[in-house]
Length: 301
Image (cartoon, rainbow, N blue to C red; front, side, top):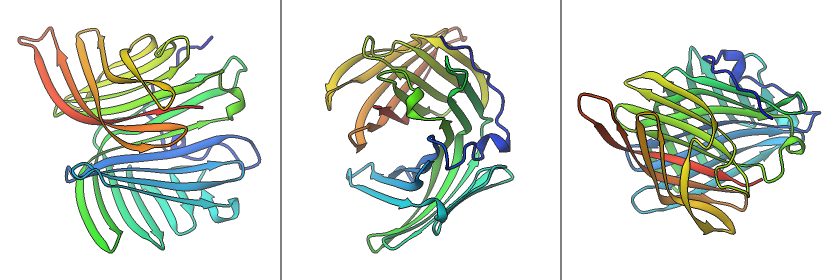
């Protein structure tokens, strides 16, 4: 049903707006990261036929405190470039210049700035539907990035730096999604390895359809895989959906274990996890093993 996508290094135009407001579609730009090993942030700028929104989650990894900020905008209050990643919603904006992403949020109860500088080359997955249109375009311009942030909220100031991630997704509308077209996504960092994966989910099998898996080692993309059943998992029930507590999978000489240790955000249509992560690679003079951290999501459509 699905043809194999391509994996080019994304161009500036790949991260730009692809649809206009007069069509039913969804398009979003997602950024996340961990500052000072203390605060995980997940930020999205989303646009659709009737407008758009800015959504930010702050999750304290130590005391488990969670803050959620959500702001809606009409099309007249939104400007989006069709040439590069440049979005303005009200007084909030994100802009890419020479590969570096600058973000500013300016609202009554929140102000924040982030700067993401990619340190790995990205990839793009373009997957057509049986209707001939794009089912899902996944543009990962920053599989791993240095990130700096300054947050003003709850009458306090938090400054930090760490590692982050950025991608851009767009597709023409939920009407073309297959039945129960849910998906899983995750990005995981250790010292030498970066792993980014995604897979659609179906009721007949938790991980039963096409998946994408990208493995970087020492800053170089060493595997880019697309196919079925790349990921195998044990699952438990959460919020009436089957979700894995621990994901174990192998690909060629690599073995991975992903543990869901915290829920940073939980809504009716998605759950976002903070993860412990371990990777081992055989076939070396001696087996390489590393531990790291990550973030992942289950989205229910």
